[in-house]
Length: 451
Ligand code: PMP
Image (cartoon, rainbow, N blue to C red):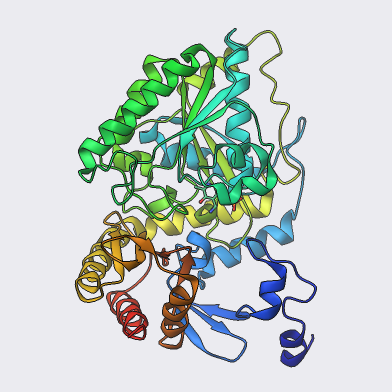
C-alpha cells in the first residue's frame, strides 16, 4: 500500500483519465477520492462532501448498501466468473433476466441481453436493430436517427449517434448513415421557440421531415434519451416521446430508449419510458443497474424484436454479438440485489419528492443570481443550471467562472459536476431533505463567490 504522499505525487502522471486533457490534469491535479459512505465522499485530505453527482448518475442507493456488498462477496465465493457464450450460462444471470423483465413489464419488456456498461448497451441495441430488419427481409434499413445534444457513449456506433461534436470530431470518420434532429431544448433551439409543447411539435415534425428525406425504408432505428442527460438535463414536453413512438410505428422504425441514466428511479418514475407512457422496442440500461458496485449493463427487449428473433427458422437470428463479461455472475448478483433494494427503499418516490424541492430551490437561486440563465429539472433527481455571462445575450459562462462555483461549493461541502456552462446535479436517490438544503446552500455560496 503506497503512502498518501506517493499517491498525491503521482496524481495524473501515469494515469490518462477519460474526458480529460492529460497535460491539463498534470497542471491542475484532480481531486483524489479515497472513501465514501451514505451519500458522501471523502478526499485524500479527509475533506467530506455530499456527492451531488451520484458517482456518475449511477450511485442511486448511496455508497453503503450492505445487502449489495454481501451479494457481491457471496457470488465471488461461489462463482466469480463464467462465460455466457453459447452452451453455458449462470444462475445469477438467469434470475436477473426474470427480475428485469418483471420490473419492466409495463414498458413491454420481454427479454434481456447483458453488457458491461452503457456504451456496450447502445452498441448492442444498434446492432440488434440492424439484424432485426435483416431478419424481416428489409436489409436496406441500416440508418440511425437521433437527437442533437444526445449522449450515447463512446463506442463508434454510439459516438455516431451522439449529438454533441465534442465527442465526435476527433474520432471521425464515424459510422455512415447517422442523422440528427434538433433537441426539444427550450433555452436554445433553431426555431426560437420557448413554449415546450410547441417546440416538441416542431422537433417531431423535424423527425418526420428527416425520415421523408432519407426514405423511411432506409432507417433502422431512432435512439433517444427520455430526458437528455449529459447534454445538460433537457426534459422534453410530455407529448414528445409519445409523438416519436407514433412516428416510428408509422414508418416501421424501431424506437430505442437510451435509459442508461433514466432507468431505475432517477426521473421519479421507474424509467423514462414509463414517465412518458411509452413502450420502446429496446431499452439500454447500465449505471444504476448495479449502483456503481460493478460494471454491468443490459439491453431490454420488447415484443416486436422477441417475436422476430425467436420466430426465426433460418438460423440468421443467432446473435453473433456479445462480450466476455455479458452476464458476469458477480454483476448479475449485484444487480438482482440492487433491484430489490431499489424497490424496498422506493427510491423513485424519494427522487420525485427531493427532486421537487431541489428544482424549486434552484429556481429561487436563479431569481437571486443573474448568471443563472436556465434552470432545468422537475422530473426526479436530475437537474441542471446553465450559467451565462449575461442573460440578454445568453453567452455561455467561461471555464474560470464555472471553476469558481465548483471549488467554492466543494469547500462548502458539495461535489458538483461541471459540463461546459452547465452544472449538472444527479445525487443519490436516497438523499434527505437536509442534503437537498445543503446542496442548495453550497450552490448559493458558489454563485455569491462570483461577486
Ligand atoms: N448512454 C447514456 C444516456 C449515458 O448517459 C451514458 C454515460 N453517461 C452512456 C450511454 C455510456 O455509458 P458508459 O459510460 O457506461 O459506457
